[in-house]
Image (cartoon, rainbow, N blue to C red):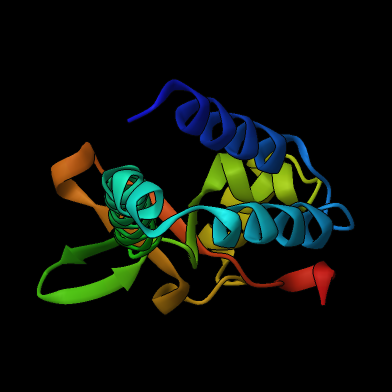
Length: 143
C-alpha cells in the first residue's frame, strides 16, 4: 500500500479513537469524501486494510462475548447439599449476614438456636466443616 494511503488510514483511526460522540459524524464525512475521491485502483489497494480492521473487530466482539459468558457463569453460583440446590446469591455466612444487617454474630447465632430464624433458612454444610449459611432475609427484630 502506498505510504500516503496508509498514513491517511492510520490518521483516521487515531482520530476516531480520540473523538467524542459529536466529532464522529464530521470525521466520517471527511473520510468518506476522501475515500470516494480515490481512484478505483487506490480503493482496491486499501481493501486488505479494511479486511484487517474487520477481522480485528470480529475478534474483539468474540472476546467480549466470551467475557460476558464467563461473567454469567460466575453469577450463576449454586451449591448442592444433600441433593438440594441452593443459589449462593441468596445464602450468606452468619458473619456476612451480621455485617450486612449491623448485628453481632452472637445475636444471629442466638436467633438460630432459639428458632427465630426458621430451620429451613439455615444450611449447615458438612463437607465444609459444618459451615452454616443463612438465607439473606430479615428475621426477628429486623422485621
